[in-house]
View (spheres, helix red, strand yellow):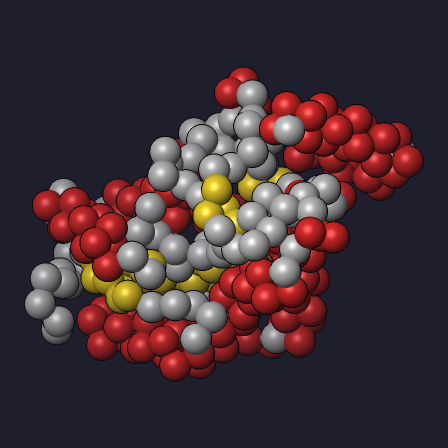
Length: 282
């Protein structure tokens, strides 16, 4: 067992007792809080991220709380790194029951202004950052009839100006889950998607601008935002119930309703809102 890792406690209790989970992008933010809640509910968790300092700080915090935890520094757009990530779970805990693909890059840039390589970077992080961990984990998830949850966004449901690559990637992930649900029905693996809405972010959270430089996220009214802990709780409920799709927040469900039945009205509302926001930033 690698130094600093704990075996799952034999007598651990909770909804996910005896389960082993990998949560990508769990060094901070929603991923970290989802991993924390999984640990509190009895799971052993492999943490992941690209920032060594933040990842180690999170691992130490979890270990100090008595959680069964390991960590793996890995870029999920690199397939070899994803193989190492999944191998960490198997070497440390002996199995894999839950995969949550949370790691991704977002943007705040209009399509006409974006450099092609920036578009690709955002798209790759969302698509290959989902495909590669799953591909590496699939044999082990088949053994346990495990659960796979792709973290998407409400912006994938109707599109969002200034988020072309991000929205495209998140929409692709939703369709991927549907396809895999059909292709791999005989395996017993659960494939689900959680569409996250506006969520409180860590102060250092950044997205990419048109040139690929990190910038603060767009302004969001606080009353529209859920806490990271609230979102983590919804994600765990989604996994426990093995749901196909969960749309977080009343706003997200309203977007689904309007996009389905009144798409022109939905586009009008989005355009009016984004014009106001663009004026705010300019």
